[in-house]
Image (tube, rainbow, N blue to C red; front, side, top):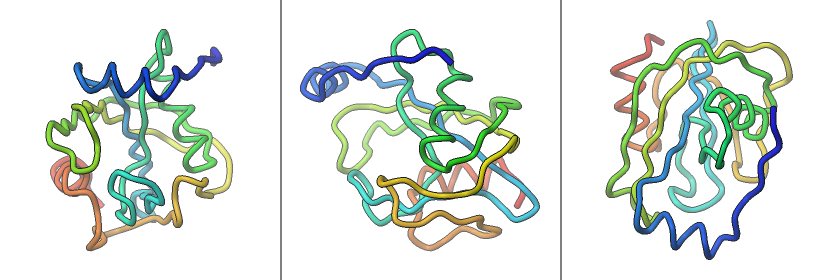
Length: 145
C-alpha cells in the first residue's frame, strides 16, 4: 500500500462542503455475523456502523478498504467484491455529501479490536437498535446474516 497524506481539516471541510466525498464501507461477514463498530466521534456518536472512511488522493479503492479495515478493526482483509453504494446527502452532523462504495471482504489475519474512534466492536447476526439508518437498510438489502 502506498502511504498517503491527510489534507488539513480546514481545507478538507471547505472542499467537501461543496462536492461529494468518496468513501468506502467495509463489510466483514463471517459465520459469526457482520462486524460493526460503535462510534465514539461525531457524526453519529454512539451509533453502530460499518467500518468506513474517506478515499485519499491517488489511493486505490482496494488499498483504502485494506487501510480502513486495519485502522478500524485491526483485521487484515482481502476485498472480494463491490456490494453496492450508500449515499448520505443529508447525513446528520456532517457537512457535505458522502458517497460510499461498499466492499465485501474476507478476513486474512489479525484479531478484532476497535480504535479510538469507537467504543466497541462486535459481530452481529441481527441489527442492533442504535445503528446508522443507511447502514441498516443496506445490510438488510444486501447481506444475508
